[in-house]
Amino acid sequence: MLFSSLCKNRVSKEKCFLNVPRALIIFENKRLLGPILWLRHKLYDIGFLSSWTPPIPLIGIGNLELGGTGKTPFTIYLANLLKNKHSVGVVNHGYRLKSSDPIIASPETVHLLNEEAILIWERTGVPLVAGRNRRKAIELLLSKHPDIDLLIADDILQHRKINPHIPILITRFDKPYYKNRLIPFGTLRDIKSRAKAFPVLVYTYSPLIDEKEKAKVRNFTSWHDLVLFAHASYGPPYPVTENLGKPDGRFLAVCGIANPSAFLSFTKNKFQVVGSLCFRDHKEYALTDIKNIIALCKKNNVDSIITTEKDAVKLKRFKEEFESSGVSVLAIPLTLQLNPEDEQQLLTYLSEKLEAYGQERSQDMDGTHQ
Image (cartoon, rainbow, N blue to C red; front, side, top):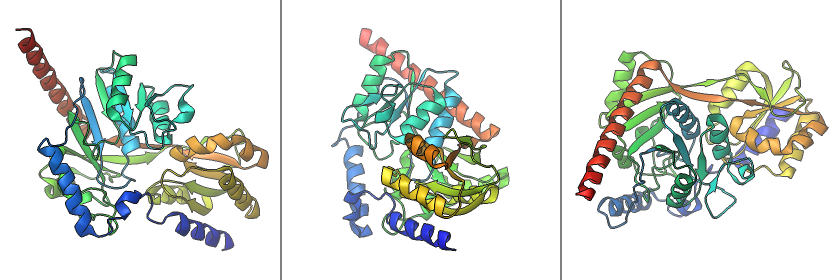
């Protein structure tokens, strides 16, 4: 009882406003925030503010929500799906990048990247660049990897300075964007009308439903050309530390993600989880956090910590502290995947769009030479 109470209090302190950007908190009144966002997009739409189009096809993945929709696992899925037919490169948003310049992922630079960039790079094996200035990041990636013929950007919806060739919007099945509200009354960071600029919509964390149910859901979003459904699955846990712990032991669930409900539900059903610590999204763990977590484990006779892959990227920096204390750390891999029918629809759609882009580019080059 004491342990649950401690965890609950920690959650309430860390979860305040999740990861709401401070600039947006200023506009707490929805009546101000909505028109400001609308005006910004309008200035881009009419060309008053300019966008840059990359020289090769760019698939832009985006969402309207603050987080928790599955951009990272869907980017991993898409890169792995397409890398057999294309030379794929990934452009990461560069949030909390430890450099003002874009960085290409490598064993020497991995310590400078955010956890999402590291996870995408490790799970796909494709060239990845992270940078706040997406144009500079893309130009750097293409200069170092001139063989790349297809780019995937993992968070592009709000970044109007880059114009993606193929935009893909993702939203959670259990809380789609059209049933949500702008912050602070909901978790939307952009206006709903922005969704109409994205011809492809993917419902993430979708249950396995039949075509009849899919048709009902598609009626809510008829303005999208293609509506697909991706389901989530958790793989077996793998060790982050050398000490493995006891599979049937007592666990503490630790995470710093935008929407921890699915992770917490899965771990509680599969393991003897006696408590949980949920921090804000993109939590940067400090040594004091690790010491507090270890002390809590010791006090409550907990053998192991179970966490998400995103958090494991950051927690593995403290392997020595965990191993010396006798507390093991296990990570649960998360996969988002379309069913075979939806996957084939997406591949066909992308193939048609990429072929059309190639034809347009050939015509432009022929016109230039004439």
